[in-house]
Length: 110
Image 1 (cartoon, rainbow, N blue to C red):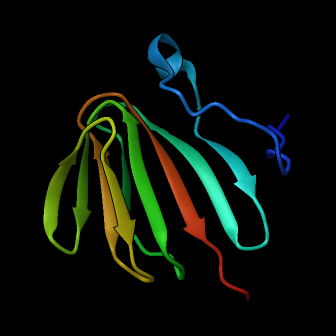
Image 2: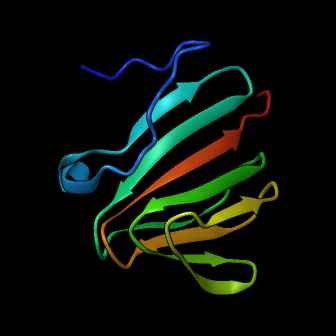
């Protein structure tokens, strides 16, 4: 059964998963008219290949360590690091250590 999306006003935890990280799947936390929020879990060595989104996006590293490939080349993301991406910005992510990320997408009509 799919996890229900958060309702308006509902508090949702995005704390580090700690010991549960390896047994947790990526989940969509919220999908509303103009906003989508996801917790992405990537285990060491796994990646999200190069991609773009039509709207703006943000990526925040909650735990672990990631290699972030963007316009400025490859950079390391550590817990607490945050990056904003303009529309259609090419990016890719690879987990250096087991990691979880909070990804927010601005959805555009159509």
